Image 1 (cartoon, rainbow, N blue to C red):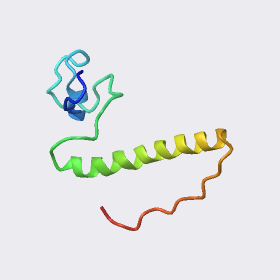
Image 2: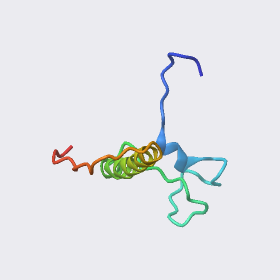
Image 3: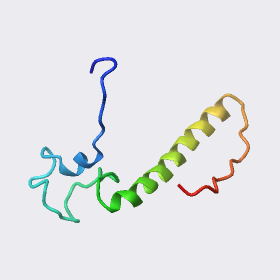
Image 4: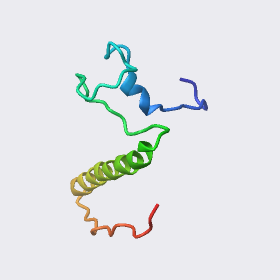
Length: 86
């Protein structure tokens, strides 16, 4: 990857990995393994998925910040959630 180049992350490609699934384009809710479903896409479900992903992503980010803060002897006051609807 070259510096300054545009990088595109296509989260939907995880669901269609030819190296993992025999028929990657077929819908099978019980297919195995299924550990890497994505919440991205260009369909109606992506609207819900983007909020779902950001909710869990912020939880992980918050946990990392709290861990770093404790290790450094810092204390972060509880953060109030936003009242602004995205």
